[in-house]
Amino acid sequence: MAATKDPRPCSIADALAVVGEKYSLLVLREVCLGNGRFDQLVRNIGAPRDILAARLRRLVEVGILTKRLYSERPQRFEYRPTQAGLELEPVLMTLKEWGDRHLRKGIDLPMTVEHVCGNELVPQVTCRACGEPVRHEDLTAHPQVPGWTVTGPTAA
Image (cartoon, rainbow, N blue to C red; front, side):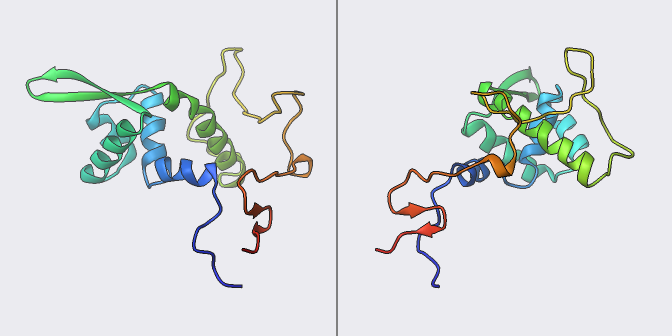
């Protein structure tokens, strides 16, 4: 089967176009932890300065971070998450939990996160309507874009 000219329209692909570049989610992790100054980001992420600057520009441009001047001489900025950035924090926590469980196998965890209830956070995705945990076998996709089915594009 020949490759289609246009890939499947997908909100996951759209989101990854914004946050899927190397270091972008790590920038968001640090900013959500309160480490929004450039020198803190360089130290905690380990990204080359030019790449980090490009990621910060992009995340500000798309509205995930805001940039605030905190020193005029020399001119320095601090980055903070916007509402859109904060809405990605559960995604970060879910990725962290997945990494803890599947890559670190629950040992030598580099960080735990405490929920306001006083317990360690173990994120779980649930259905907003019924409150049940989301499981693969309980899901049915319904493509909404004309010309697309679950298996791919329809014949023209």
